[in-house]
Amino acid sequence: MVKEIGDSEFEKEVLKKSEEVPVLVDFYAEWCAPCKMLTPILEKIAEEYNGKLSVVKMNVDKNPMIAALFRIFSIPAVKVFKNGKVVGEFVGAYPEEAVRDWIEKILR
Picture 1: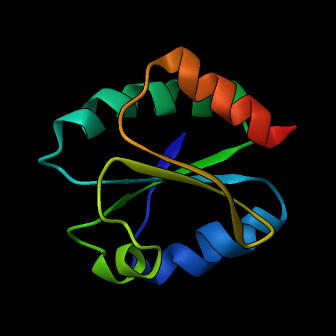
Picture 2: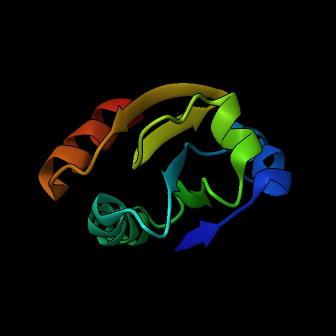
Picture 3: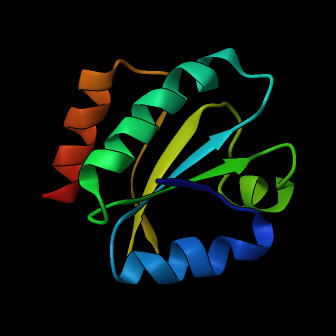
């Protein structure tokens, strides 16, 4: 399951939660076509990992504070957090196989 979060929930849902399980954050915007291509891939992966990976989405237009803090200049931007720190990231829409390979390397 993919959860939509805002600036006020970031600390709890990403930083704190990443101490228990890796958290993937999908930074997106409603108007972003590549974001819309990436969303179903991340939703599918979130379902398959079933609790071994938390997946959240942040709309950069509605949550500019966190977007600025993590220097989100281009979207989609995806970051994985472990123990409160970014341990992997990519920008752009990638095919499902590439996203899966990337996640597997990070989770090892």
